Length: 226
Image (cartoon, rainbow, N blue to C red):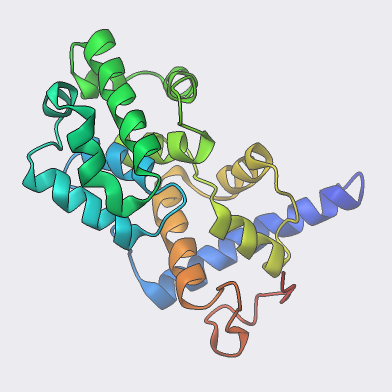
């Protein structure tokens, strides 16, 4: 069945992911993630959360809501300076404001401002389109696909990579390799929940300095502290 050592590790990883999902779900329950009222709010959050904490993103989103800018057309018509002021709490605000502006310009010019029309496209075609936009990498694109467009795509982030290495699931840093591993071991309807559960695990226990002694999945973990 196994051709080499890598295959053995791969198939061990399969069963580990399923067991991990079950234990995390039992421990934490449903996460109801991504917290947003509209698809556009998900997109905005996915762009703003790059290199910052969600608490900072929430402050920026609240400002955008107060200014009534969580709308494609409204943001498109708003001066970049005002967007920068709102997203300042999320850090790198010059870059992030420009990326938001470029995104809404793309939607207006190509879809007459109809974000839903864009999000209804085929998953591979939409992913390619998102990745072609300045400032949108694989994690951001897949977050938009999964949470805004409801497409069956698993999101890989720094938390996931850390947990995979420590638990002995995979030592790879390759985004596509890890995405394929999770997608082969979970049902599409579990992608959303598993990603959120991994984030919660990293925030509570699998921190940079891990709390292994009290971790809810300690018995599964290889404890390869990195």
